[in-house]
Length: 233
Image (cartoon, rainbow, N blue to C red):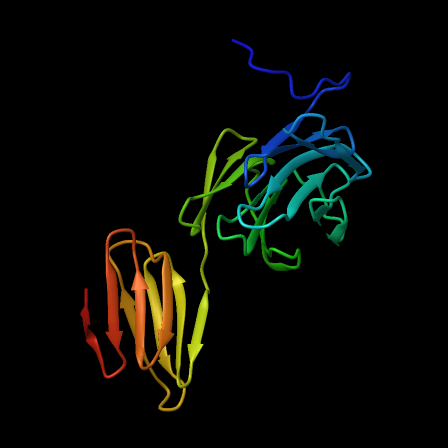
């Protein structure tokens, strides 16, 4: 049963996302982005966003930041009033997918044979271009714990990605994730290091007061810097 018609336009609506409070919907039409509050008699906020079709849109869970990608080969960051906060330099191909991490601090951007990891404000941490032809990343989504992405590719494959090289530093200790289940713990003063292997992927880690705390999906590991080999689990 049709509950209500929120918006009715002549042209096709390519993307639509809920606001963090579920009180509004952002949608894309042609080269424009529009925000339609669900409250009665509320006005639509609409602005021209890209020089070509807007192909993807995302709304951060814990802020009023939006991110979009388009056929003009750029991705952009906006506030909820349509003010442009960041515009990327043009890529080689259109930006076909985009998503903001649940924590709101990272942005994943997908294009043809390419995935990019960015700070939420727009600037890029790293870009991965694939040697084989996987096609465009048509859809991209973060896992709920914010450590992995999955993307649907133009060649029919699913692409999985995991964040590596995350670093935390406290006084003389530095911890770096080398892979999904591996952390390198270094003492900068004594120039010693230990490689910590886990049975499942690392979700969060924190350093302080001579201890390293690591969470995996099912366990919490507490390491004392003087007794690295015998953590409390």
